[in-house]
Image 1 (cartoon, rainbow, N blue to C red):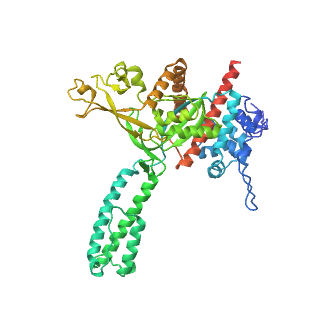
Image 2: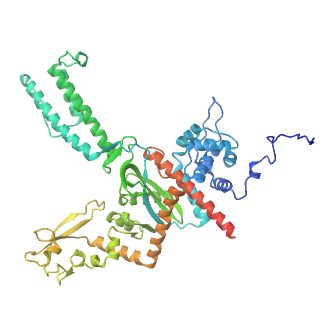
Image 3: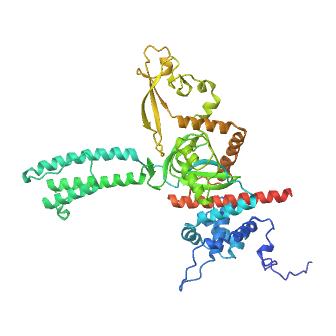
Length: 523
């Protein structure tokens, strides 16, 4: 018989009393806390408000540390998960000093405290990592990826369709004004008709018509057995057209000059083609174009764009890099989606080497028949007068100059027309119309393409191209498939940008800690 008595409870307190004694010396939360203390994370918070009433607030520095560590720990930190971890996870208990804020407290803190300072925090973290790990910010590997927005995929608004509907509405308004003029002929008054109308102009006509015909909405009748007067019918019809025109104007203004669509759920999201299923089938979904610049596996710059094409994202991304770091990278490396005349001129203007492929780079370098095609204008020979000579020996004469479409630097290109294409044995191969062939020559762009070819085909260029596919595309792979951030959670451009900065800060801290652990193991 066992008479042993246990005079303790298995749930009673035990030593040690301090969490730091429980955590391993290589624990990521200790690395994180050290970084936060060294960069002085408290200076990025707003001055602490003085409240005479209510319960004391949570420690704001601890709140900031907890939010940032959550993004470092899991890729994207759900606010409800943060709340739960502060109750159950020893690392979060250490950061919060056993306090347990609710998800609402975290949400309010992020929106009110971090929204305006998140870029400065990203900059401070990146500066610390660049100093400790000797990050080369002169070599920037650029890539973009479309992230599905948190919006309903069937709530699209198309700018072109809206403009067509607006012009159809203009015709209906003109027809209505014609009918109203016939009814007002006895008064000698006439409503002017135009091809286009504005909401303010329609509202003026509506008010004047109501005053002239003594129309009062209080006296309007409706329903079975009530016959509407002619004035009421005209008034209601015109008011309906006015409301519809205001709706079209708002939709066109939301799209702006650079977008052709938006989502009603999230007006800042643009509909883009995305590879959605495992077969790679494209779908048209509301999304944001996320642009990153990677340096030594760290995200050196990140931005959120509404453009579908990567070409339009290069200049804003470089300006964002300059805003954060104070200089432009010497070697921006990107794929063929970024190679445009505007981007090359921007690089030339700011002392950056041209390492962005142009759209026909792959065909230019791999297809010998295309490269040496005698019917390409760049392969035409010149005579002693400097005139272009076609394969049939006919000269081309200058026709006119025209501004380059979409160029922001005022550049022009020259057009040359063949002297005589009649009876040419190469006509089928050389041109597509019955007229004399016209070629477009942009000597400045051609020289830039040759410079890009020389840069990318060099040994240095080959290494940069290889590294770009590893670092830039690899970073997106880590974000999406290792850390499970595939879709934006917040709505609105500013909120999504806040979210991406937090994700990038977490990614950089995660990378830095892993590198430090590998170096420690190797030592």
